[in-house]
Image (cartoon, rainbow, N blue to C red; front, side, top):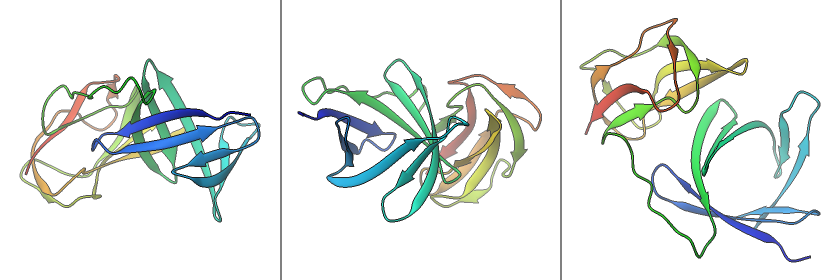
Length: 158
């Protein structure tokens, strides 16, 4: 069977090739076993076991795996598009969620990967991490607030 190929572009602009048939799934050429669980999670095995959840809206794919949120834009290899953000240096909510914890305040220095705040959606905690080193300039949400997809949460400057 000929695999269906999709390119996923993450928020940093890196592209990841995914080839899927009914029999197998390959990410960047590596075989990954995927089984849908009764609770809606997807069990992934690539030498290690991971639980993942996914949400789709238009060309955007949100993947929640091992406590991290990954946002991808899908497209065929022949139909590449550049993703634009609403504001340079801002972090937005990937989906409607409740703010469970705000970890940083304006003026805080953060490093790539630091948890800035924690959202809750679909009964999962979703840490929002710094995409790079920088300084928090604005926090636009507070604990307990319901935020909508695309809403600016935190602004960072390098």
